Length: 196
Image (tube, rainbow, N blue to C red; front, side, top):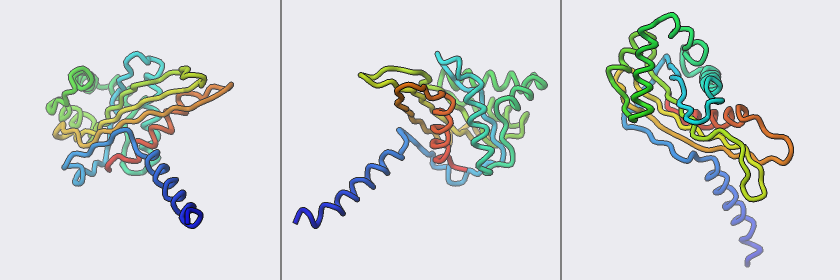
């Protein structure tokens, strides 16, 4: 009897584990997400905490992935955002004030987000935080770790429409994987859950 039911049962277990592995550590939608379809998204400067080497890298990665999705008519990220903030002092001040409150107080200031929307034309803001960006040893294994969190914000209201996060761990023996490559795979996975 066990031989007859063994293979289908094993297939079910493998499919279940594959589906579980594909899930994010967390992903949460607000009720307004189903009606939120932005055309232009601005990727805010990332909160990198102690991982300064990720500064600038992650915004470029996220911006490229978003642009490749063809979900938006414009993605303002990385160097494009830096250029706009250099040319527009008001935009720089608005972005700096908004991100300081968002990262330090977990407060999405509706007035500051509206100001960013007015100055940049963005319908949505995407905040990215780097929770982990390093190489480590776990027991006998060498690993590359990248942890990312993202929040999609309605620029017109300041409401957080979606937030998600996950961790990628790549084992290696001799050749270290590049952390930006690990981050690219993780960012693509997270963005796959983002409403648009």
